[in-house]
Image 1: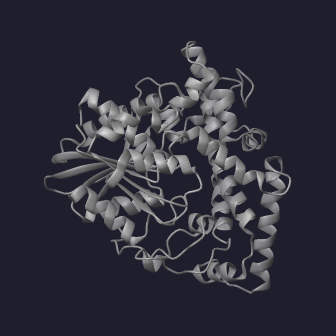
Image 2 (image 1 turned 180 degrees about the vertical axis):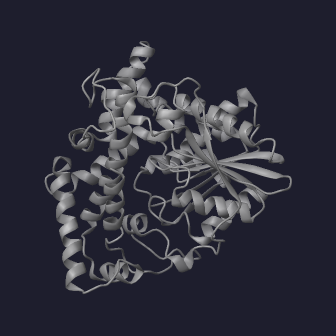
Image 3 (image 1 turned 180 degrees about the horizontal axis):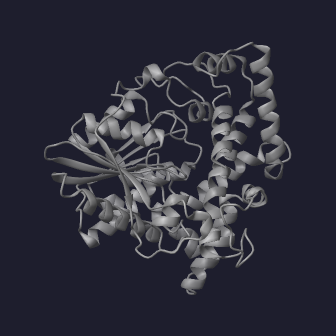
Length: 424
């Protein structure tokens, strides 16, 4: 599955975007939201950062005694990364976005930028990753914000206990991007009760307001491809054929920046196809989460109940099933029934409401420790979501005119703003 996702990423960066340019004072050049999401930030517009910084990989036993099915024997603990100085400094916890690990590219860039600015940093994987589900989730059914916050908080405590003797900390800060940005808000809310870290500042980067709404928006992207979501396999193969034909036709010798730029100029894929590819990547990430959660809970949603998988079993059929399940399916058919079983008093609408930042809107509005960075053209947000951000965070919100979903997170101006937020 990892190889297929990597292949998809290669394919994703080959979709067209509108011509570079700048509106007003903001210099991020890619105008189209899908193009920005896929292409990200051009290398020359990223901040200059060292190739490596002082880091240590942590493998944490967050849930002592956790029994793992044989298929997951390779998983030896929750993986986090700590970057630290040999002097007293503030420590920033970074929570990754959906499906991203502790050393995902965005995590590494933000970690290096903060480290260079004088901060200690601990990066954590998203609670939606198999590593987190197997190692750190109590229920193994991620997606309920308050429950994910409890799991993240315990992971942070475990990570801090593992490095406390080596790292001298003056204050604790918190940040996250995409779903990790939303989860940072719930973790901060929990910290008001637990008071282990007493986070002084919390920065939410491109958070989604509602996981449920975001899932609907992702499905809309797939609905735009020919045949709709049920044809994702055919759609993927067709996109791959286009890519291959152009590669051979152009006599390119490597898949590098030059090749990508040429494909970009040729507009190899339509805008609808670009949206479909973004939706497909989200679906592949969801597939890993759904499969792992299903196996860990023996729910019988993908793998027949009581079927014990080993490392020698073929997972192809289960992968096929998982990729035809959306995040929307997961929320409706696996997560909600699980929540309702645990708390029968929670109905469907209450469940949906609980997946939104609006459920803690009063807290977010009243707490000056929060800051927000987002984009006006983030396609996972509705106009009502943007209004919620403006009403809730007021002058504490920075809303860039473009960047799609996370497309500009590594743009040097955005990175500088993030660092400045914590240095103020």
